[in-house]
Image (cartoon, rainbow, N blue to C red; front, side, top):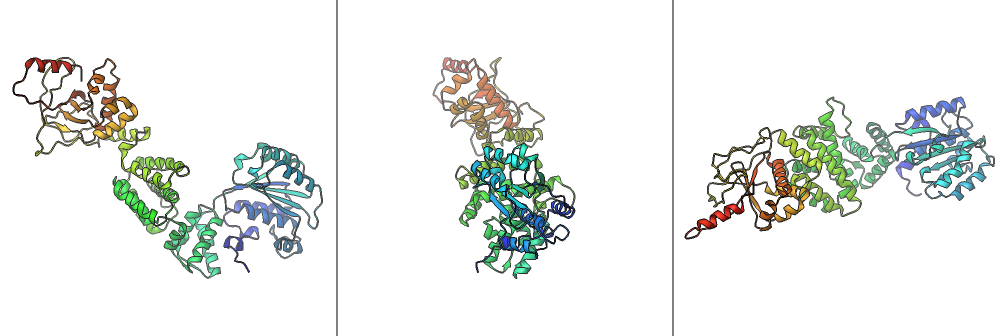
Length: 531
């Protein structure tokens, strides 16, 4: 005898066997007990939540010769004929493969015939949302005024695709996702029947992977049972191609520490172990979602499906996170999900992690808002002063727009605080270590000037931002009548550095035997407009 899958072997046979849908099964049992069945039912909900099982139970119950409080007795001639597949009065139609108007017209012709051996002819139309528009129109009249011996049961996972005219003619029941605790109980029950040992952590992991669907949970249990009789968390992770909670904790720590190198090496290891990158992205999203719930829900009961050990690890990790960072990470992970279906999954995963570890690469509005928020909180550190061992380069004197004057050289502060937007006084020439981040912003806001500033460097002295650009076009652009380029540089610098600076040139001084005073004056006049 061929092996029968667990979800088929343990399919509910009565309404009392259905798990997690009591709000529906009790209503149907009461209708059957009182003889108040309607001519058309609509069952809607996510996959694996019991829609088809309830439809088959309802079809048996309305024809049962000895119903028990609304449940079919499973012993009468009618119930046995259904169980043996011999009852021709219960018809199941897959709308995905029979969605044409011809199929519905054929159904309408059959509806006129009385049932062969039962009280009712029952038509179960699964995935009804797949019917074409013309097929829906053909079904509409029959649904509105069917013969008294006919009952329709429509099932769908996408109720929003059904026409309002169809919805209005059916009694609708919405199947909800089954709670994780109820799935765990069912898994343990079936495991005992099958001689399996399933740890509590493994059952919780299966319930989390099933996402509220009992059929998916039993399918995963079936796969685990093929590995061995003793099923633990490692078994479930291996069968489902999961990264594992320990790896997720480690990867999240790397992202928090902005450690892109180690994060990529961990992804490479997981990829080598055949972890699906799409599933890894989904698991990482769920992990950050759990962190978000922990930061938001203060009560002991939280909508998180995990073991106690993992919950403690999540709470420890969430303590070091700001809710804004969690929300930003979740939005970036959600955006990456679409790329998983159209491109290289591994590359998409790696790109996403690099963006999370390197904020300068993200020039979207949300990323900029986060940087501005950091500036407002006064957490942006100033550019460090150069090491004492590094000789101070010769610098061309900067000038403001009004008069030519040499800039004094006071001591630099340790931090640039957002509450003090003016440039701090700093006598020494300090290289701007975050110049690359400023250029990244310019690539979006002012691509032309960003291209001209390629291979450039920048320094801070006093209230001036001194720019050393090897491209000779820089000075002509910056001195043009159009001030948009200067404004773009100032705004980008203010976003990253937290202060507003004037612009000045930075050019290594030319050492000559005798300086020509006229040449020096001409050089000063050439740069007069840069500020």
